[in-house]
Length: 297
Image 1 (cartoon, rainbow, N blue to C red):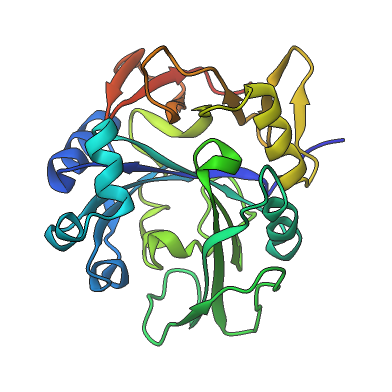
Image 2 (cartoon, rainbow, N blue to C red):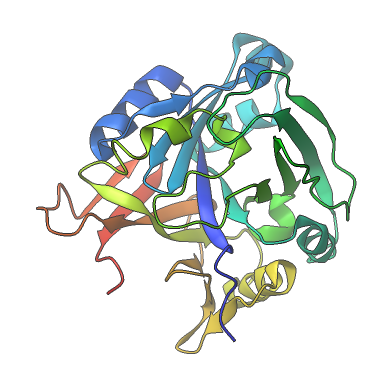
């Protein structure tokens, strides 16, 4: 059984103390621009962020505000414990109503820790004027009405999935690859306008794999949880029972943490741009190992 072509590792999120320094470093290393800063996140008072487009993938960095440090939030405590680190893996699913229910019962069954829907008049690339949002209810379908763009994001606890986990469904056009220009709400709704002129930078065309080191859970068991939760035709690699295969050659690898080392998102493989000299083989930024790999033939 083949994975549904929509089932993709679409976004990685990092957690950093210094948003501008980290974002500038990532932009330089991956030859890619910041395409969005979420004003609604900033208005919440606890976090600010940037989104960098890496071909058909997105790299988000979030940073606690002074108010968050004063309040001692989950993010500030994580930074105090681990320093700058990988924070979340985001997978695009074909049907959030199905995947949200199956993800919610995995592991200890903690269920949804956060979720929202967004609907905006317009088309992909037309901006967010008039956007409406609300709290997502487990099992709800993504609203899809002509003349609108819409999206749902649902997050699940790191204890159940080895890292903060999020699933996404957006409409319309989230299944059109490569050079995707469909709706993808986490990165706003204007990034699409730059795809034709520059589909990707000179380093990478997007994510090939994420490596997750779960805390206190066997990597093979964690892989099975994601398999059961995501469904949609994903499969276990027959040569490695701790690797989950998604669509388009992407994968999720689950590994034992290094002694005294970080847990959660610890590594990301990037598809190298074909036909150009690689800028690096591997490097470490924000507590994550980034590795350039050959694109699928």
